[in-house]
Amino acid sequence: MMSQMPQQAALSNCPSCEWPLESGDRFCGACGYDLSAVPARPDDHPTIALNGSVPPPGDGEGADGAGSDGAGSDGAGTAWPVAAEPDSGSGGPAVTHVPAELPGTDSGGSPLPTAPPTGSPVSPATGVRFDRPPEPDEYPLQAPDPRIADLSASAGAKLCVACRAGRVDSDGYCENCGHAQPRERDHMEQESGPVAAVSDRGLRHHRNEDAFGIGRTTLPDGSPASVAVVCDGVSSATRPDDASLAAGVAASESLLTALPRGTHPQQAMHDAIVAASHAVNALADEPATAREHSPHQNAPACTIVGAVVTPGLLVVGWVGDSRVYWVPADRTSPPARLTEDDSWAAQMVAAGLMNEAEAYADERAHAITGWLGADAYELEPHTASFKPDRPGVVVVCTDGLWNYAEAAQEMAELVPSDAAARPLHAARVLVGHALDGGGHDNVTVAVVPFPAVSQGAGSA
Image (cartoon, rainbow, N blue to C red; front, side, top):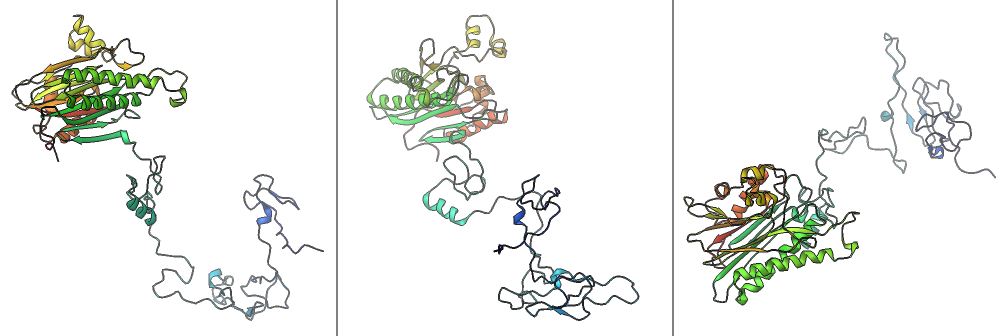
């Protein structure tokens, strides 16, 4: 019994790539196009004659010759219009029909409406919509799915920074527009009473390897104390971002625990640096599967600098080249840098081999000689205590800032006059200065008013 499948239309060339075909080919030999997908020729398709008329049934199915001068019809009784006669003076050929001029029927055989509903943007002649706006040069973001927006709002999910509607998935991409989201540490801001800190990735680094920890507490006598710790990951080490984060958390927690117990602030600072060192060393002891996949791994490492401010005492501590600056509220009084770098440049100056300008102009200037990490030569926490006789602010920062304002006077000129009342604003201004200067490094700044103020004070 013969197959009931429709006969494939005879093809001489592939409809996809125009490759010549041979009889019986089921697939194109050049592009693999499935020739069976070519629709079969319908048996009852009326052929429009060259003069535009349709031969009636009985004149030969599919005839190629000229048909009757009268209107033809198909098996369903649809009258096919005859083309208008050409102008006697034109001498041109008969006008052929445009396909859209032929009346159609719906699936039940009923005639289609001859005109679109009132207000429809569809042309009755061509079926093309004319309400489509002109194509823009740049395509806008895809319209947000309202269900996603509702879900994000109701569940408190993080929203996309680009379209402001889509939910951010676990990989950090918007489920609506696909935009990659900034990582959490690319830009961080925090306030804790009168203390504030800002950290930014900068404009050249692919990630932020800085970290900070701030807080406030109460001494045993009831007086307030403010704490700020800033850490800078050593970029040449493995996992510098993890090292700075571990050190910042460990040091700030150690200070906020020790001070209320009555530990002297300078001793508390020393102990906090030791705790930070242990936290960074522990990263080197983790199994290899917890590290970055690299054939040349070394120990995670970072620098650290911190400040403790009480009503009458200012204590600083550091290892590495991050710094603390003192900026008095009365700008006629001199500012000061309160730390000495653990760096090649500082060693050259201390040894009398170079002046400060020459040392810091050298390409080796920022090579550090002290850091936290399992491969550090030995841990030598530096601490110092000061008793300022006037109010001011303490600026705790990484070299991502002081590279653009190295001298104490330069730093003081950048600090807003209302920094003690608006520390977060001041920190933003300082970070902005570094970014405006080129943002070559990660930049982190903490601003702490002196003397320490009550826990309810600070910027709003």
